[in-house]
Length: 353
Image (cartoon, rainbow, N blue to C red; front, side, top):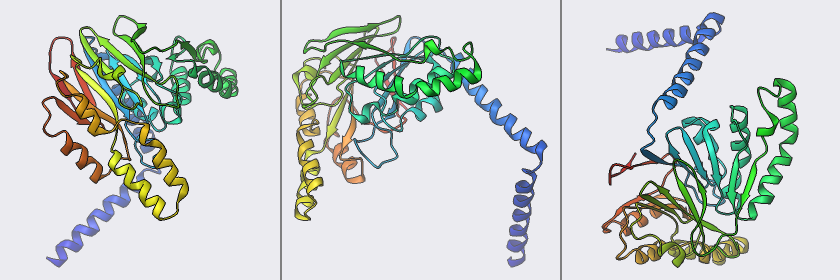
């Protein structure tokens, strides 16, 4: 038996070393690179071939907490209809997830709930990659007047990069007119107002309560007769819950205020004043999950998704939230990065992948 294990180990070692050193052979390298590129092309063609304009996919490209050290992406939700992509917020570490699953040049529009960094930090890379992969028109970014500083700042910051790429590849390959973002600004109100409509979806915006952010926005999206409501960052507000009855999906930010209060007390006891202030200040910044549940009593919704959980997801917080919503008569999901939800025009079923 001992000789058998020694023989097996030596055999595996020889195979490993043979494979390792064969990679230094240029022919082998070419073969490996060719297979990698073929795989990427096959994925791209598959994306283009699997077109179904009767289904809408909700993809969580970022479900993490604000200012978190978690590898999760910050706020980002992509809606995909056919090959068309619509992005709500673009927080840090989110764009890579989009580009690993979809073609960036197919992003038609971005909608920004507000200009906190965890909602806009990847907008620069999203816009750049969309441009260099072949977008045929400038990216349109929808939001309140807050987005003017955001889009103009990114446009200016990336002007040198634009010049380098145009000088290198030429205007036909990377048309400079398609690189700067265009801000589409509106003044949000308590009542929903239509801000975008195309052949796939309609998008309405409404004010939410994220004070001192004065123009924080939620969105109501129509896909045929299907309705998706995205609260954005908000405390409990009638502007959201007056709209939820009959919604197929409600995506709401959530806080476990009991846990945040505990963290503030711990910081105070340990004389960590900055953390005490931070934890105390955010208590009226997001909706408590308990209050979300109370406000959904007697409401007819298909699926509730708690997103952007504060504090950052840990096994205690996950257990707390899942136990809290274990007895509800609607579907429930605590969002995680790469979650996908499918809605069909022809079915009442909401599929969670």
